Image 1 (cartoon, rainbow, N blue to C red):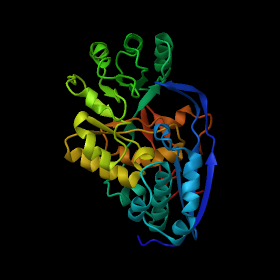
Image 2 (cartoon, rainbow, N blue to C red; image 1 turned 180 degrees about the horizontal axis):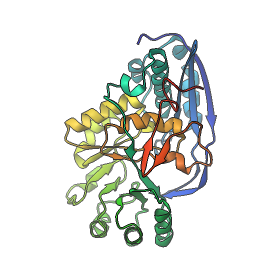
Image 3 (cartoon, one colour; image 1 turned 45 degrees about the vertical axis):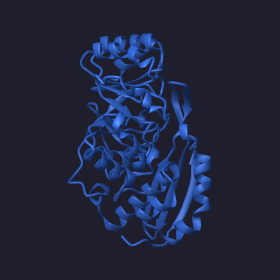
Image 4 (tube, rainbow, N blue to C red; image 1 turned 30 degrees about the horizontal axis):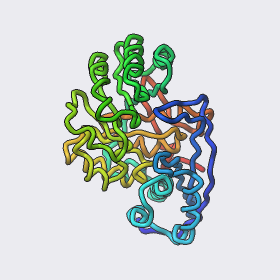
Length: 336
């Protein structure tokens, strides 16, 4: 669709979590986000992004970046042009999402159809358990009564992480389980963890190594699939680093939006990799574009809204371990 002049609205929201959430090296109590709104007559497009903490991509800087671009944005631009104007990250993600929804409303078509998909379906999603004492993690995992798939956060202590995995597996014997090390291991320590993961039937190990030190994985037999998260941000990094991993976790806050995410998913498939979609702890507005991308993925991790003290209305729905996002949340039927 031809780019048209728009009115731009920008603001940040604090988005406190309902409880602190711990991963390797960090504890989060909130997930602040930048919200972009584009208006063109009766049509509105919205996008939300939190950025990624490990690239120092924060809502304050994202807001400043977008504000500096206000004249160019309001003059009108399309999503492909946007990819040339802003680097991968949260600012581009929020604006990209707003452009998708605006086009959806102008065309009277759902975003998935604009993206060339045949349709959408509810997606089996993981439910994430933050790092804690093994018994506490087992209790939290069991409390997800509808969950069929779980993702456990690890911290880089092989003995403690093994105990965490064993405790959750004992309480949830039928669940699909993946673990996320969040860069907690290196080439020397990782082999000490792998036997416990295999014994517990863990299906996926996400981001075992520190970003930019992927070479430390060389020589380690991948007895279960390794997934790249922090290691691969965008399409360019996918080309450079894919051979260290079996699964590519695409997050829109990392890659700069659904437009780039769809390109990454297609390229990852062409390279023989499986594809995963993940999210930060954003609202349903942030989860909605990722839900579209999730239609192309093997593994889905879109539980972010459940960790917030308050989500938006209307919101995504979780039923029987699946996530569903209707057009009333983001798309032709949504209202701002």
